[in-house]
Length: 241
Image (tube, rainbow, N blue to C red; front, side):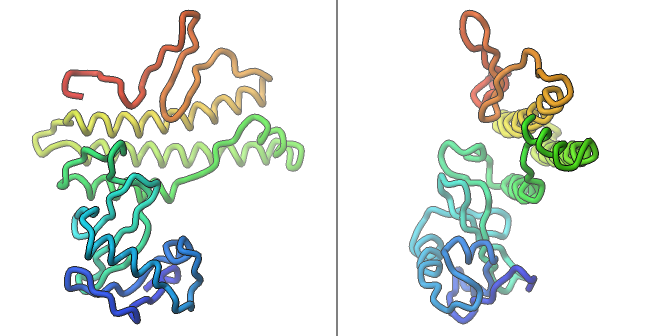
């Protein structure tokens, strides 16, 4: 058990003939609890209602995932084949999700990607942030922020690359549903990179020049006769996408 896991085996909860042994500290705190507190009835009730009494869950490899439309779902991870570890999965498989149409065989690839991206989250700086950093620490402070962003962006696009590889069929085909998933994740990465680039341009040159609007992973050009959107989640590049 890691330093961020909490032993909850005392609740004596079995799901699919396997005991729930631990829970992540993040999950515990999401219920307003602290390690050492014994009153975790709300969490236990949620696990029972979801995975014992309910049907709004799916299998992801050996793990069990709640299916919802929230930004995070409760997950039971198979630990050593003998117990469950409860934690939060920072995505969802529900309706209108980026991953709604992912076939069960490919859910583990997506789950690995989501967990990997969770570790790579970072704040995207604005021009004002760079100027504030310069005022406090000079050019070195600004360079440190930008270099960190570049490293994180490189790791993120490497994760998207691995997702792209993992979603190909054994025959080397990327199905339409997979194209939509990869397109959205690549667009989200481009969205973040464009913000970093604009911050640097504004900081060094006082203007970002003409640029598209990047909103919710989409790219929209403010043309004279109206906005023209590309790379949004509904864009169809081929009949199967």
